[in-house]
Length: 471
Ligand SMILES: Cc1cc2nc3c(=O)[nH]c(=O)nc-3n(C[C@H](O)[C@H](O)[C@H](O)COP(=O)(O)OP(=O)(O)OC[C@H]3O[C@@H](n4cnc5c(N)ncnc54)[C@H](O)[C@@H]3O)c2cc1C
Image (tube, rainbow, N blue to C red; front, top):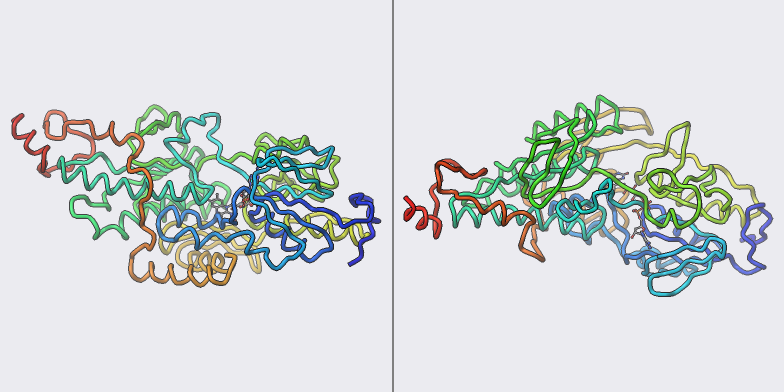
């Protein structure tokens, strides 16, 4: 490998091997590190988690179809064959870009000649961070497990309450945000309620659960072509999801959502409405967009920082007058491009501009339904079963690790034919926000019916005795 730094941007290393710090082991960071592993550089990859998460399948962990280990891989394991790469599990808390230094939560500092910053995005509650407690978002394995806990617990608590009191609060599931994640979550909850749980309860009817998807803009999947939004809407309706378009959520609290002025009681509320860039973007000291993404030039460098590359969801990169979307493909391509530009520096070659190669976009809508906008190798818009097959094959292909691919294929085949999900476990707290308030009604007062009371069902247990006394 030629180590002479004749490129005008090459980091000044005084003859030693350049030190490259990669922050973030997501799609961008892992792809950068795998490319850097082939170069004569010393790489340190820092991530606050020990694993890389395949976020497009997180909703399947949240809805009990898959287990966490099926969609996550230890970063150390992924990079174990690259001897020039050190993996550190730590959180970057500060960046001194003039000193080329990273501060880590553990107190350690890391010096770099090149920095690849790829810390992605986080949830945004549009200034209402207090809503997060009542309406968790989906970004990490921890989030997925919390959502799984809440969704499954809602059915369990309803069964228990039905047994004891003869009624249960409404099994309403409200998903806020009609982008791909919201659509996938709503579709998957509907699948659970209608298909996977239908024979498992004795007192409640899971299929009577109401799944509501609230979207502020006129259509779901607003970043997809209009015909695919319409197909998605139809497919959602076919599986019983109620879609409220053009509706703004004005308040979220324990067990309820206010949509405009209307209050909707909810056993579970999920947030899929907004993302904000990782706070590290602002720490760099370079110009950022309104959302906090770092504005990068055609080489993926922030202004006046040729030794820094910002990639993936954290980067604001415009191509043909439009920002490149915050999805997995651009993140992977940016990560690889940044590493290749470092290779170009080492070889004394000029850097080349990044160009996003768009192969298309997809979203699934429950079992057997999806929409797909194919851009390569041919252009097409698909909806329904064909789109779902395409989605499934592509997700198996892009998952890291042969074992995971095999397990994913097996889990989906099993779920497909048996109508059972394999990871239906509730762990942790056995309470739901707002559930206690929702159950403080008098189910047995015919003058004052409780929402969610199932007509014709007599109270049983303690409540029945109480009801008889009151009569
Ligand atoms: C639920 C969900 C579903 C999605 N579905 C799709 C889909 O179907 N198709 C698609 O193309 N895209 C999808 N996306 C988007 C896609 O996952 C992202 O665009 C992609 O993950 C961005 O990659 P990234 O490397 O920029 O960031 P990420 O993959 O988010 O990785 C960022 C990494 O940085 C680490 N990190 C963050 N802050 C720090 C810190 N301070 N110190 C150390 N480490 C840190 C994190 O732990 C993480 O590992 C989905 C996203 C979500 C959340």
